[in-house]
Image 1 (cartoon, rainbow, N blue to C red):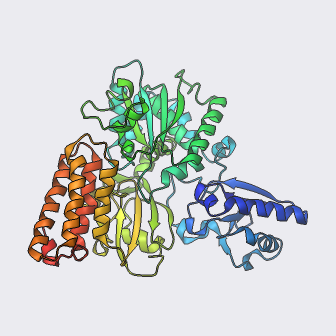
Image 2 (image 1 turned 60 degrees about the vertical axis):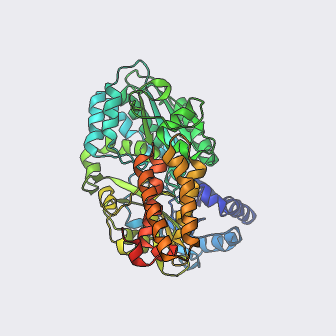
Image 3 (image 1 turned 180 degrees about the vertical axis):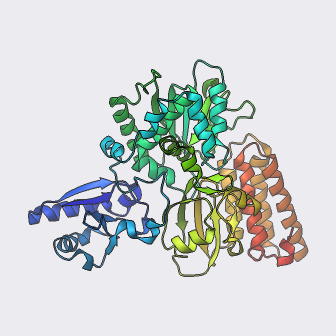
Length: 516
């Protein structure tokens, strides 16, 4: 009998390793033939550790399973499995998973992360094989025609970046993967790097072929040691298998993993490049664009993990296939990450267009506390706070921009009615003050002055003075949003302004005082 248990770091944090050991030990004691295979995670995090077993109905799930449940689980597996209190039935028939549209995470929970055989058996390297037979400009055209936009938050059309780097004249070009996933409530990059690292490698190989780059770097945040280890081992395996020596057209490509030092600002592409060069992570002024003068002054294609990992599917199945997912100018799928005070936290990959309400209430099941929903922060710690009256907004880039918010990296943090949004606005400003690189005045000074304004606003009992301070805070948000050198300072305005607009009572303001 074969059991499948995730080796994902979250699953391990809640006892997956101890469970695997307990099951193996109990099976040995009973002289019961059992193989425990460690796979990636399906992202059903509220059910971790999740155990799966093959059956005529597909894989049957049990969860969350603890080490203390090992004996009873083996009893059930040798008798009536469906009667076990932790039985979930066929995993792929669970509504949470069955209604998803998984392109990036199609192999999640199914394959072993470092098995090239598993990866190839489930469609791996099909995109690379097709790209190797195409002229580079045709590969770029496929990415452009697919409508893929940067998944790191800026949502810039990926194909335009590719075309710019390809047309740049230089003897050396680079592919840089921004895996410095530092936003609170986000974990899709980590899940993919730990669970399906060859997908990212394949995407970078295709990018290298297309734009004429021979060297790639994956810049990973230091807080992801399991992802770093998985990537390093995957690079070695891919190199030994010949994937990193030649792509079939005589173009050499090599890949290294680099680890950051905990600076949030290095998630900004130019600060990341400075860090890769061994310098302090400080934002560069643009122009010149990294696509023309990036790493070591050479043309550089910088993309987020999910952007590069989307490319193999586009090349394997064609741009029209990918473009059929989504709405408007938001094409393809996005892995939304449900976190915070939510009943069913985990990863939900869907095409753009479902509503925030479908995501939070349908998939997430509402708050874990059972209290009413107050707000949802979308897009990380510098994302806007979205009130319930906007929960029916479709999840696409343009629709969210229209309500003064942004999707960012797809992180969704849920809060109930006990959360004070004035405190969260102050936290955003404090976070910016702590993490700012200090290069531009709006971010460096504005964040500190903003904390002071919020403190005065909350402490005052004078209605007229509170109104003056609220107006000052709005003006400060405008200055930071439109005057900062990069998105660090610019986006700090989103959580502050949205909290002030939608939740004036938390600042001691009457509703009419909060209307701009």
